[in-house]
Image 1 (cartoon, one colour):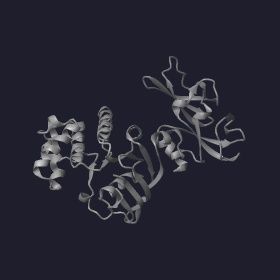
Image 2 (spheres, rainbow, N blue to C red):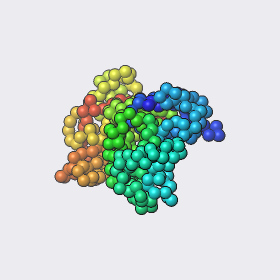
Image 3 (cartoon, one colour):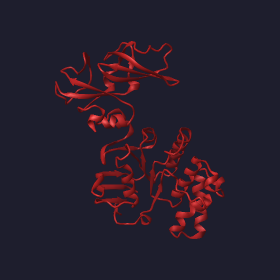
Image 4 (cartoon, rainbow, N blue to C red):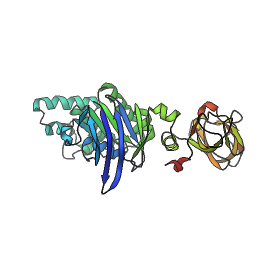
Length: 350
């Protein structure tokens, strides 16, 4: 079932927290709403769920206007970050709760609960109480409860934020598997974690200050971001202030060969280069700078280098003999690995 935001605006006491959102999630698609706290992403999710009423605009599910429908009549499943399980109910009764609220026939409830617990790998824990489960297991139960009602739309609000890194990685794999098993369910996934969005989503909608900044596939937004905010929020990015020249761009005294199509010579712009595409030593688009920090990350080293007064990160395969702090080094990147953005570096653009 499709999800459509038609110029949806939400305001509290005159304060706009979601501003004229236009966005469509296709049937069976996983759409991640990615952005910092206060960007409007959770408000958008709650508007779909029916927990907030838009000041203007419409919410449509499968082409049907549901703006005025109460939550229980929208046919959705929802999972929030704090699980929201009933501590006094066993796992099977927690999962059955939504079905009972919908007055599902008792004979059907048992089968639906068993199916949802099996799908989430929690069938063996049906008789336990939430306090007897780990955080990851509780989250699986919350997902099972949402799936038991067989929703056409599944809303996930920061579902993994309370888990540690190892559990989060495992649950990401489980969510990806669930989506493969439920290809017709549309998923709207709210997160501030870029790796979750890059891993799970078919498309990512980047939110900032109540507005939609960009929308595209993870590859599109990572390889060709539309602005500095998107570049910095979807993956790590070097954002360098440059001046467009007749042959490319200039940073300090360095002449760089990059694609500047559509930009006038003399214009200020921001050059985006991903850290893993920056090499150490001589090469095309050579930059020289001073090492300010070296971080060993097991299989890689991250160098923080000051170039013409600006920080540049380089993510390199583990170096046997890394440069010393304060050393002068040369960096380089291929012309095709740089993207020219409109003027404004990092925070200037948002």
